[in-house]
Length: 184
Image (cartoon, rainbow, N blue to C red):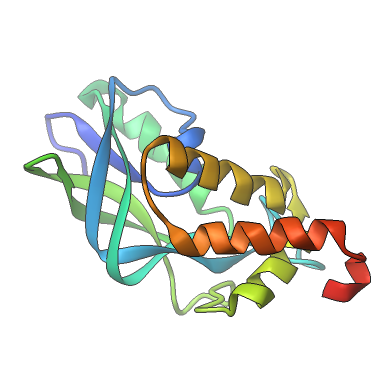
């Protein structure tokens, strides 16, 4: 899967701010053909089977700016094993080899895309509905609103404009100050 050279990993959500694996470079990158979306119900990291949260996935269409990590060839297999364990807890993501753009270079990379056939695939939700789900989500990795806040903060740090996520964050922050029953 990795060949003899370095491995590139494309991150678009929590991997941008918490990769959790050894890498020797982190670069801004562009992936064409997929976009970042809150399209995955989380029943582990940011929710439970009884009350799902909502997390990011790469969904078909458009493009996505994110972060590419270069992993030394000798670390590639352990990094892939780590990422498979982290990203495929419920098999809602599919590991894919994609082509990303780093500056003017095009390189092969590994990323995880949402499996549209999986029961946890949420599809395109209205922002208000997504905010309601996020407000109620909490899983083994913490509160769902924290995931959204960290993602938006790191996108901002990287200079990546993602207006819909800012709109979603504003709704979530507004919902925190309201009676929770309003969102039930």
